[in-house]
Length: 352
Image (cartoon, rainbow, N blue to C red; front, side, top):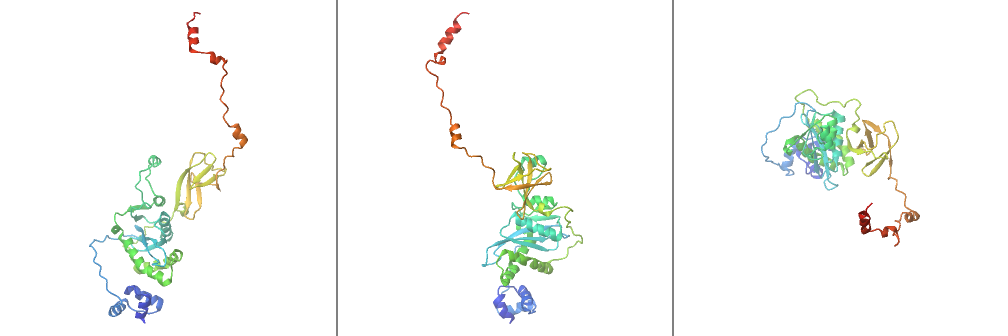
């Protein structure tokens, strides 16, 4: 019966994962080595040998939260049942604990969401290890305002990490992020098969299944750190993470106290914290789409208007009034026409 189930449901599973699924889903408790021998004898599985180039493994960090690796993995997670997606994965370097989120692309919003979930679950890590993608770091020159303030140019993700005092460390190659890269392989092998068995083919249900799946991974593969101290820090009292994990842009208040942002118009209402016109305010767009305006670290009240008031149309009567008048042409006997340069010279030459 075990081999029949393997042929029907677990035909591309390795012996270890197949043994786990047989026990968890079908109630057959078989040692993975025993199953391996059965599969080899039935020619249902072939031992795969990989010859990788030799590399020296970097020693893990000593403490939980000392360094967390983050990366996105593009893959056909639903195989042929759905579209391709990107798994945003975070892995602690010391323990191998993982937390992930499935998104359509590797975006700033997706990176913020998975880091936000990590902070709420474990705390603020000391450092985060990423690659050189422009959603994490930027290589542009600092603006004049940044130079005057002595600030380095940051991405929106980098700004959120700066608020939480998380150091961003960049990796020069995929091999440098070996922990998270290997974890991608685990997800691509095990989670894809679990999604198939559960008949899941959309991101919403896939993200719901991730919580239980990562808990199983952490229980099975996570290791104890060498150091007992946890380097995660609690969120500072009074800090609202919605104001940390958001998109921020500076805007100028118009003379009519209207702030423009992404083709939207926000009319600032009269209040005690009324920002002066032509001054800069900070527009924050939260991850849920809500927009907030901040001036001197205090929120500004406003109402959104659909469009700016149009100038009144010019009527036909006004158009006639605005027509240029006919140019005045002096008559032939006008004194201006009798004036000449010769007359002027004669008058100047006469004695007084």
